[in-house]
Length: 460
Ligand SMILES: [Zn+2]
Figure 1 (cartoon, protein in one colour):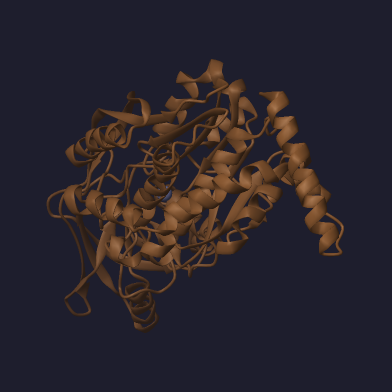
Figure 2: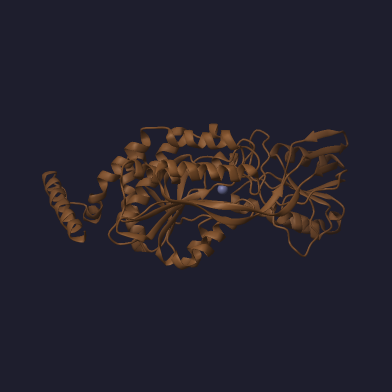
């Protein structure tokens, strides 16, 4: 096979030189190695762009099962559906790999202004929060704009409901208040915590998301309010005392059974060397988790379906994984690492799509300089759909544990869209996603995964 490839490359070099000389240009020597892959890349892109199959599949998941929170019947039914669909697609070694996941349930919840005048607010409890008693928690409101503000308030925090009214800058910066804010307030004696939703101003949409309790501090109930209601509450406390009542039925049940879903196109020469692509199949329990992260699951899965449809079997195995329990536990990614620990040295590259499926601009890549040069070369095959930019780093929450344990090169799909306006909200539904963007993303991932799996030398 090597000989055949060498002769194909030599032929490509000759042809390329002829064309280049005829055109009066030097051949772009660095991309000669790409020539054997151009035909497959064109076919994959053509097949992806010719239909709205990916969008229709995503719509079917959300329409049929709704949200897919860990521990829910809907997630497990959707997982069984995905297994059956992968088999229908003709993928190989389709299987479920067991994972124990946290089982948090929201129940009913409400937040109201009691004084100076009764009024209901929009509220969404934070994932993993404890609930309140039946009557709820009623207390005066203290609004802070930062952890420094909280610490400065000192003894005034005791007995209050604390609202972190921190406008969205970047997700990493702002989400700290959701994650650590409840316990920081509880440490000073707060009875409940509210956070301004972690996202830009929307249409009064609250954003849920996980909190992390400090085990050394009492657990207090915590919920998100909309950016509009956070600003209203800020104005009201500036005028005088505001009293709130928060009711939440949230509770944590014993761990539940769930699964990562795996499907493959087995490699024709090096089946034990694996290129992994995927997203997380679980979602928050509002909306249908179409942007976070049903879309990422479908476009990575599509890469394999397209290869199968075009009868393209690369040198190495391409594996899709739909991870479970990213949102409130990261147990799926950890279970994959533990189950496949011995095989991680044979993981050539791992790619995750979990930034929404908007117009794809390219990929982030983390790996060696030589690997980056190869990835940048492959990306030139995606110039036609303007998805050829390779960013300085790439990774994902689900591939993270394996990437770290196995020192595996990692990538993420990069897109141009307002992900944080939608994610973790009731507005995360399939109508926010453009079928053409799904098609472009599917094609881009298919080309990238195929060529990486097909190259004579593995990416390092
Ligand atoms: Zn996600």
